[in-house]
Image (cartoon, rainbow, N blue to C red; front, side, top):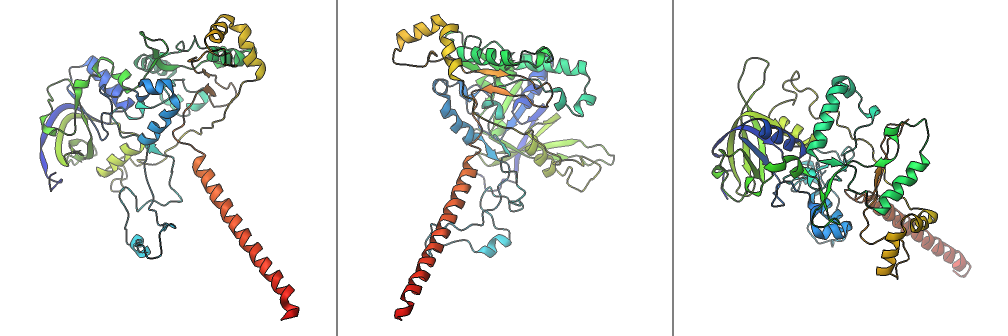
Length: 451
């Protein structure tokens, strides 16, 4: 490692520097590579993860067999954007164990990766990001439904219906979206047809009725039981080659910028250095890039800079570059503000006995073959049958119900359950102590005449 990371070792020159390798950055790269001769350099603080840059991690055979374990991968790659300083004392330590003095926190002390300026009562603990080439496109659900008309808000006035339709179609081509990948699944067809029968009313437009969920996914040609989930690599298409990755373990200045497309993995963009200009325009002179593995910094000078490292991290980078931080109220005044997220609600759906038993009549051949192979199985659904992947738009509310096999980013109820259990145990102990004190008082009252 070098001793002074502030010293820049040299400079790379390129046509376009893309900061962030998630789906948005991949779209810019794909469009530029397909339509121009520009040389593109992409940087990401995360590691490559897979030989093909930005590939979906669920495409591994092990997770195809049992998707339940994929939740651990999501948890490992989901990093909180801000962690408040933990001032609590570890109750399991002995009284003679060393602990950080409370006054140290008041003086700005914090452990690695904690934010001393973060108010724990105002922190959005569920907000997170993924540090990996491909971003969250490496573990997303691959669901691609179009937005509900009521969700558009001001976007309805900013983008015309005609332009929005063009953008939707282009995005669906890049992601290779389909509604047919699960048509062979008994469970999928059963859920879809049951919902369709329930919502078959004349006052509901056809586009709002239950249907297959649009997904970025394909069945593999060699084995139809395996899926190839769409990802950032799907967007990059023919440009997602293992050879385009420059590993962080190698010297950053050794990257061949003469090639059309290169990705610097484990490289963090520290800031964009702005040109000294008298007018109101802002332009970038160069970017400071930090090789995290070698602890070295270089300059990258480009004709165009594209910042697309996520909602929070993009704002963080621009703020670190001296933009929108109060020094210039007229430029990016809303930077880092008005961040919103749509509410999500999860529940479990269990099919009625009559629906499950009806599968025997609706799919007699498939059930008969399954019974021959697995006579001990009472469930009339073949092993390896695809998950249901259905959805419909609410015709009078701004939400899109989806019926699918879902893996949440984390067990949303775990922390709450632990907190409730802790509070319950606390109240239990308190009550036991009160009962103990009450028994002592009663005993003293009994012994009083004899004292």
